Amino acid sequence: MSQKMKIVAAKEAIKSVKNNMNLGLGTGSTVDEFLKLLSFEIKNGLNIFGVVTSEKTRLISEDLGIPLTSLKNVKSLDLTVDGADEIDPSLSLIKGGGGALLREKIIAYNSKKLIIIADKTKLVSKLGDFTLPIEVSPYEHEVTSLKIMDKLEEIGYGGSIKLRFNGVNPFITDGGNFIYDLSIGLIGEPYIIEQLLNSIPGVFENGLFINLTNKVIIGEDNQAQVIEK
Ligand code: 5RP
Image 1 (tube, helix red, strand yellow):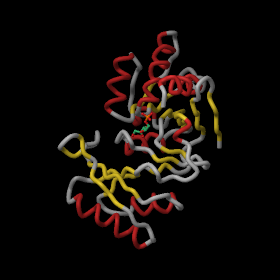
Image 2 (tube, rainbow, N blue to C red):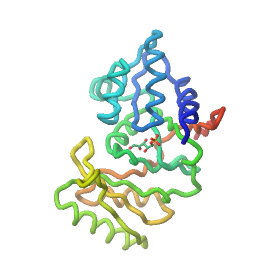
Image 3 (tube, rainbow, N blue to C red):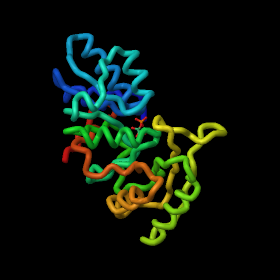
């Protein structure tokens, strides 16, 4: 996605931010553009509080002077703006390319509205070309990954699963967990897969976001395409 398209999407999303809102702040390079615009509005008098979905977003937000709070202080959020790795026609998503899926899902779940900003390469007719990130406990994680494949096989899905690495060491999430990236081809039944994965002990969350998104903003060269539910 070109930088320009990210900025176009972020500019459209900033129009939904109103004074005195509590905002969920997503993670990723597209959200980074939104954070820059948000910081500009705050310097011009906008009053908001943000709740971050990752330590990376916390650092960037603090640097940009965005006032932060935590979910327990505000109970729920008026709006969350986040990115995505894949978006299907029903606005179901695969997220977690950046490894922040657990915190992102907690924030999306506790938000009155979720706006996703992305470029048009993220639009797909069916989810599953992008590997599905799954956040698991490091404890006996190899067995958890085998169990994931067993359970999927029981409902007719085959494929492969790989522990995510950061150089020579496993990638560690902000919560201290591991990520497995799952390839099972196109996902015909995202809701069933989401529930099945989360029912396995050792799995904390997976990157399927179903029925959480209200609006998708697709950045194009000079304009934004808005898809609403
Ligand atoms: C992080 C995410 C990101 O929102 C997703 O990977 C999209 O990132 P980008 O805007 O850099 O393409 O889910 O966990």
